[in-house]
Length: 117
Length: 144
Ligand SMILES: Nc1ncnc2c1ncn2[C@@H]1O[C@H](COP(=O)(O)OP(=O)(O)OP(=O)(O)O)[C@@H](O)[C@H]1O
Ligand SMILES: [Mg+2]
Image (cartoon, rainbow over all chains, first blue to last red; front, side):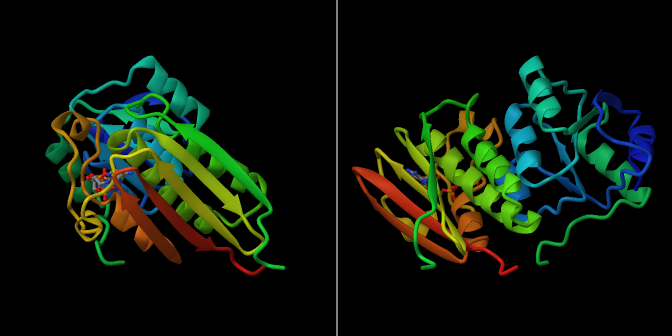
């Protein structure tokens, strides 16, 4: 799914932006526990979370993920933004709740990650 | 000689410092990147190092994170000042965590850190007593 679509579907506020026309994200992974993401996530995925702290950005950094999505209208504080800028991580924020955001992405074609691959 | 230590990078990790948590691993990742090591190997090392670093912040009284570079492997090592892990088998079980509620709110406590470190490693060593925990994780470098 192109990041442009993700932004539209979720009516997302773009907080930091390193995406371009071609940024394509295949999978979505939603969790508030970062080790769950570190166990499974592939780099071409979107990390969807209800957290908004610097460890989310660190997790994206370690996994070479380009984009994270904060749900429920969470916005990061300035030191989280600067960490994202430093590591070229795109931060999106949506007013939708976790389940709503995930379902909107899923019905529009975003895939989940299988636990066993 | 393939088992000669080429260089050691060391980071002091403070207990409960959630602002700095991850800095050491970030620095290790950038250093390895500049050496031209392949991206998927770097990702494995970064995950291991980050989980280990976070464990020092959350669970230990503080300690050291080392990245030892050899010709054909990298070791990530942590040594901390206690309180140690009482039951290592239990700690290595997926989902086992003693993280407090306040730590969980920050996004930790899935009980997946040690299992992740093991899963992404080629070799995993752990020893613990009340004086401290020692962990050594080896990732082999791809022959180019
Ligand atoms: N350096 C350490 N010193 C003391 N206890 C530790 C240390 N590392 C891990 N532990 C113990 O082992 C348990 C399991 O660690 P593990 O990293 O797998 O999970 P976690 O840190 O609790 O949660 P997660 O890593 O998923 O955020 C911890 O909850 C803690 O009790
Ligand atoms: Mg852990």
